[in-house]
Image 1 (cartoon, rainbow, N blue to C red):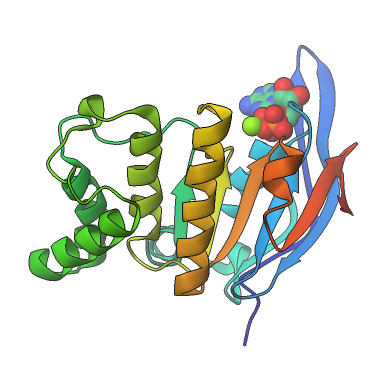
Image 2 (cartoon, protein in one colour):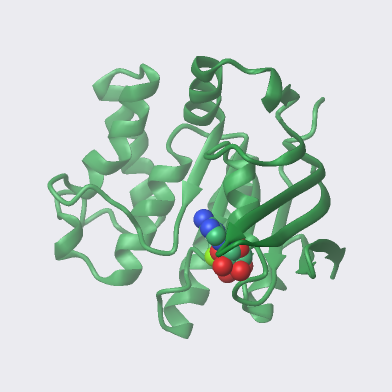
Amino acid sequence: MSAALQLIDLTRSFQQGGVTIEVLKGVDLMLARGEIVALLGPSGSGKSTLLQAAGLLEGGFGGRIVIDGQEAADLSDQARTALRRDRLGFVYQFHHLLPDFSAEENVVLPQLVKGADRGGAGARAKELLDALGLGARLDHRPSQLSGGEQQRVAVARALANKPVLVLADEPTGNLDEDTAAKVLDEFLRLVRSQGSAALVATHNRALAARMDRVVRLEHGKLVEG
Ligand code: ADP
Ligand code: MG
């Protein structure tokens, strides 16, 4: 079976005021199916840049990106959109939930976009939100939820379509220490139980240690541990 994610000699640089900043200088990474890997590195080391590459959000990269056996460079725009929708899940530091929709609706919507029926999508949303302790908050809007609750909804949304790979960019970076640890543990438990792989950017070593493996961005290269 193909790996969930392969990055091969990935490079990325930015032009800034006539100067070229090389952020990724040849990154190699492989995530097996179901493997949960922490991406560690200080602020500015290129974690978000790497996750954006893996999420097929932007062009401008050198090297190869292979997701679930599909070579990104070979995909049409349409196929790339379908791959992102059907096989990837995203969690960001700030939840980006739709403010006018309830918690349940926020988790239902990505499933409808994929073609699920409303009943099945609702049942799946309830199951995920229940598992995250939000069974009594289904009808709440994001503004009626605490920060930790909002991030739990964002986690449920990312997992709604049972993605092969979840990309999480400092998913608990906006929460206090205790809440961050709790939300991360629930996230990891759910990801494991449904067999998704995950790449989770963090600058927190203690949180990184809860994952299967740790890789670290250092001067544009990836090192283990
Ligand atoms: P991290 O997520 O680890 O904090 P980023 O990937 O956001 O790091 O940024 C890595 C480096 O790339 C930083 O020096 C940042 O200033 C630079 N960078 C990121 N995005 C851009 C951009 N769009 N234009 C110019 N420089 C950028
Ligand atoms: Mg970042």
